[in-house]
Image (cartoon, rainbow, N blue to C red; front, side, top):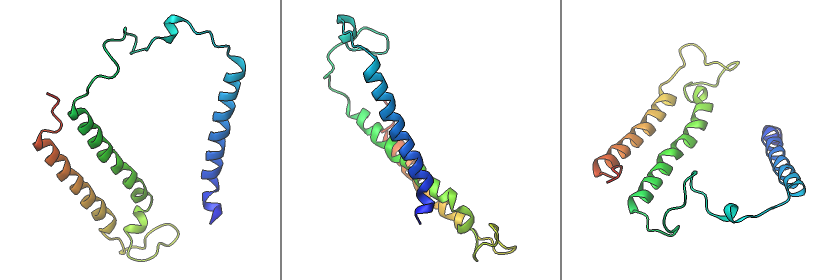
Length: 134
């Protein structure tokens, strides 16, 4: 069981070691030289406008939450894509392939139902006007 997760654990270890190493080298080699210009807020190359604590429209948060909801769908599509062959075969696979005549619609139908539910939700949100930025 651990053998299946070994590549993921190795990648995670490499990422953590690499991040610590980069931050450590930067901390040891860079001398901070703060100036008045460096201490000012930076807004995409423009001079800062207004206060940072302005009120933001509720529409912004609504669109942000909708983005998260519809973006999470890809998290559910990845495992489906990995197991698509197994989901579309009535019997256990032989040598990584489904025997002739044993294919089913289940794997594709499962994702089509999921996508249809998402499309219905998207149309509902669109018709309610949640995506208009007026």
